[in-house]
Length: 620
Image (cartoon, rainbow, N blue to C red; front, side, top):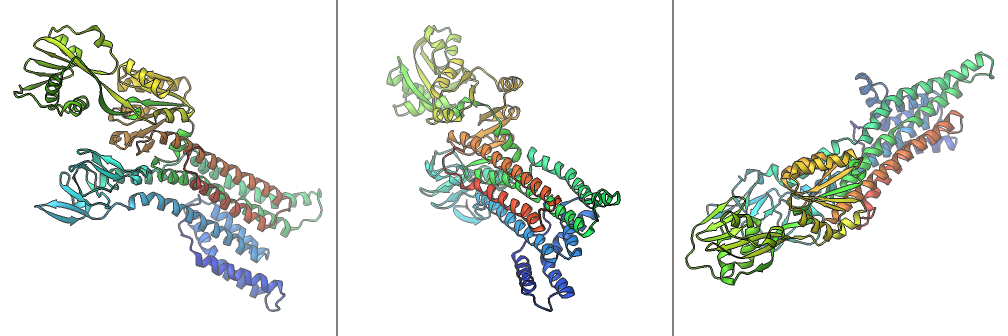
């Protein structure tokens, strides 16, 4: 409705304001020549800078068959004011309307700048290592697989894999967090991060247009285009509202006339009732309503994006504000997804050296953890070939290292305890006999308990891991229930069954296999700096951060935004109805009518801007 084809500038408003003030002073001081045709021409000149755009919009809409819109309402109201000789009011209506529009436009621009500042930081140059030298070129011209160099203090221009030693990066742009994050060799560095330690080299893994940052910006741009249910309601409301208002305005003129004809009431004064009908029209402009709802959502999206929380539109805000249950994926979300050795049983240092040498050939997280733990022991002098047995483990000569099932396959007797031991087990055997085992565990994130506690909602854990491990994590984090042994399809089914019981479920996950679950849930949250692309695409909310407490912040931010949007709606409709009633009974003049609209629009803009003043804590 209140979309503008003309941007509001300051100078026309200034010119009109000065002329209007001059006219009022002249007529107030009783200047002799300032009357009749001179006054009319003076006020017409004051009207044109602010009114011509609105009249033009009304004509354009009408030529497209859309007669009932707020531009037409205002054009008629000001034309009517000229007809009944209330020239200053005609100018004032447009002047205040344009002032309101300008402030609203500024507010939206401010939000847009916040969002795009997340991305404006994409450097326009990249230092590429070619033929032994370093060449400067645009990020778009760098091919995937090339090596780029980033100096301390520079922003990373493209997503890449870190080739040099572990290095700290400032990730505040993506995560809203001030502490630098150390990324290990081989880890992924996103465009937009700032190298803070030393010169680093990266192997480019995505073209410029597909970097995490470019995707985030695209998501946010789409977000402001995606309409929330509340916004769609406003659009439908306006289609019905405008013709009803026109009809009522006509009745305000006709009913008293019919009454006087029937002799029910006294003399009919056309000027009086025509004036009241016009006031009614000006009051009824639904601009405040139309401005305030999208603005509230837009401000909410912008404020959250500063803190590393991306809502993909007003619909996502509505969805997450209404959830009563949060389901968490376990590995990589509640836990770090990094294994560490908990304890070793029955193995000597030389045995560990052998196992570490075997595990070197594997890229599995468990293998990496063992190499990290025992890799410093001197490797055996003669190393047989290592063979991987998919799903079971490794064989090297007469050595076996893997799941207890691997040993059983070779007819080796395994202690009973191992089969239901908690944690992940690597059993080791040599020369056909069991030697001992290494027990590993995935570590729970330090803020998981606080994050779950602060949600104040029903929480469950859904995981493909063994039930005993899931129960442990549920106990460590204080989650309501843990469900283990689930395949991705099983997670989605579990969420669907909760929805059938009337729950509104948000799912928090990070992985590729979480995409179907994110899509099934009422609100999908892709969590973690390394969220898989697929999860980012299907989720409603993307949190580029390693802090679980951001999930509580996201829900609080959504609820706060929704509350502000609702306040805006109540305020706009409440004021409207009140002044409309006063107008029909002749108790409101055009000035009150104008305030009812522009004033409420301004209040709504200011109310929406409150979202930005939110304290750093996440209590809404």
